[in-house]
Amino acid sequence: MRRAGRDGIGRAALALVLAAWIAAARAGAGVPAVPGDDAAIRASHVVHATPEGMPADAADLRTRVLLVDPDERHLSLLDGETYAPLRRIALDPALAGAPPVSPDGRFAFLATRDGRVRKLDLLTLRSVAEIRVGSALHSVALSGDGRVLMAGNAAPHTLVALDARDLALIRRIAVRNKDGITSRVARVVDATPRQSFIATFSDIPEAWEMSWEANPQPVYEGLVHDFKLREGHIVEGPFAPRRSRLDLPIADFFFEPSFEHMLGVPPDGATAHVVHLDVRRAIRRTPLPGRPHAGGGAAWERAGRPVLALPNCAEGVVSVLDRATWQVVRHVAVDAPGCALAHHDASPYVWLGGFDGALRGCFVVIDKATLEAAGRVCPQPGAVAARLVFSRDGRHALASVGSTLVVYDSATLREVKRVPLQAASLAEPDI
Image (cartoon, rainbow, N blue to C red):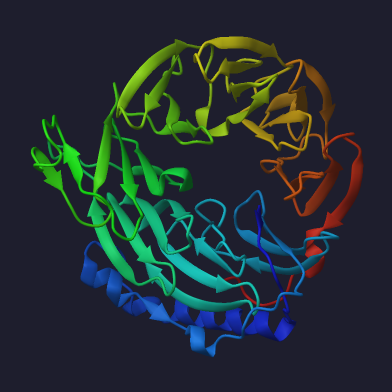
């Protein structure tokens, strides 16, 4: 789910965007099947609207919520106050993660797993631009200033930087290490406190940090005696990678709020590796039980101390670490293995989901102060629930279960309402 912002949307506008996208798909014979070079990517670029032709935003438009269904094949636009569904869009193939939204809330960037990226105007529900950056897209991230969209591909092995205004290609970056070994991109995230993107990989033991500043500093690889004399191997140009060396390929990472450290769990799940992004290597390795999932972690302040919690996909525990020492504070016992945590500063609880078996479709809530399991919330036992998120102010916890949105009071855990999302479905063909 994403908080979207603004409105003024009608059925006719949605019909227009659906028709445009369907027409583009039917005309897709001219779009390269696997855009492997700059020319092929540029050939797939289509601009549907320019800023001059778009209506201006209005300050009195109500806040909206953009909701991705559990199947990642439907996108719903909701009223941010009542959570009433406004419009529902079917997508094929599925989205490659939740769409980033521009800082002003006006635009969403829809990336599908077949490598297509579209910019959607949430005020009019019209497509602004589209482009195809690969054939298997894993992840996209929008820079904190809203200027650059970075896409990470599993095929081909590339990162692709796009101008967020119209999705024009800025740079295609081949992913390979110093030995020439290439890799799939596992994930790319925006690290606004560092004004950079961070990418992790499935096949090489590295993590890359790439500045999205307009005038980035050059990157020095290897040992440098004097930066003023520009000694050492210098990598210049936009999005030059600063490489953090890892013990082995690690795709699963959690990024603390400052983005100074990233905590990764290798495939065997036996140890959490703490990587310092300024030192560019792991500075600590903390043994953990079972199979912790770093990408499903959560971080908060407890009694004045920063802590980080990792769910466990193999054992019924949640491991809580002190972020100052990276030592285990407690292994919180829960009834079953769960793979995803969610929290908001306004809620006294961290919510654990992603269960199978008897707790499928449920959430276990953990008291953030006592680090004890404090209860259970089951929107629809046995169903597959999406990863739970919070409203912007944190008062409500939102979980989509099938075609229903269930809203909870995040402090009392009481159910507030159920909203059927299919009420906003339209009969037009899928995009």
